[in-house]
Length: 293
View 1: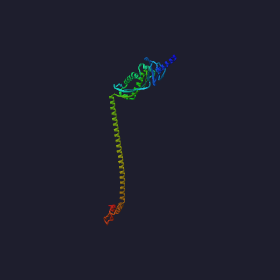
View 2: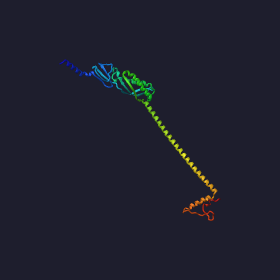
View 3: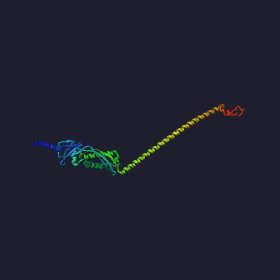
View 4: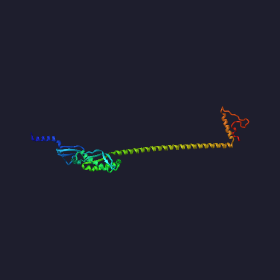
């Protein structure tokens, strides 16, 4: 065979068989870390294709996207010697520039979280809890804010040099000790009972005010009726007095009224008129009422 053709054939065959060893693609959101016979290379490889590379490199692609890890039920002691369980959420990401350092000193992402972040969170919570007087203070907004800020600052200062960037620390839940939770529940029940009694007292007071208003209205109505009766009585008395004065001055007024009454009686077919004394100047009944005695 022609030596040149043989060399070309061998080169093509080597590229076909070992070409992938000279090429590596780092996925999106990752950083490539290369090792050469176990020795970690000092510089990271950003996402995208890399060619040519040492075919003897071993590759470890590390995810540097933002993540969130939940830490439930961490015990936090306070000055009143009670333990409160705190549920946390920590949003973090790996520092791509320090990916070789992370891989060399700790390992992959799960090892970084288990070795550095979780133990430090527990330590910081215990330390911050010693500055809180009572367990029920965790329900105060300022206490929760101070706890979250203290955790984020202390955690960032500790894990930042180790290649972890802390974005946010969130306090998701607070579970007070059983004794304290029962005491708070009983206190809440007493407050609710007090509110119910206050509402009942207010209702009773309102009813009493309504009854007083109704009684006042009745009294005012009765006084108005009494005033009306008095006015009518005064008017009737005045009328009677006026009639008496008229009769005393004019006796014939009574006889005239008697005559009018007799005329009304005479209009009734069933009425009968009896003459008292034919020789009397006033033989008809009632006509003598105006006579002077």
